[in-house]
Image: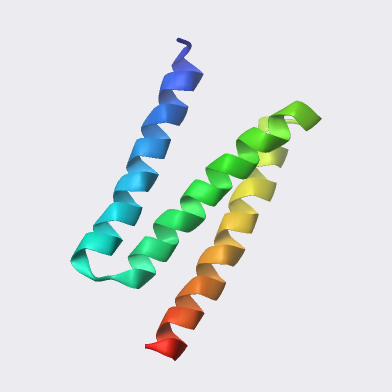
Length: 80
């Protein structure tokens, strides 16, 4: 495995840990943040077959994850 692959696996474990922490401690906003981070990582990797630089893919992926997290946190605050 390359260093990049190990780094990505570590990020996924960390982001999943954030999501799990939010779920287990009753903090839905933290869980939404973890979900947003995982969405960002997934989109970053999905875009790899399209080409483009890592920075461009990261910007798009984590941008979409941030939009999800912001909308999710607003919904959590409004609905609870």
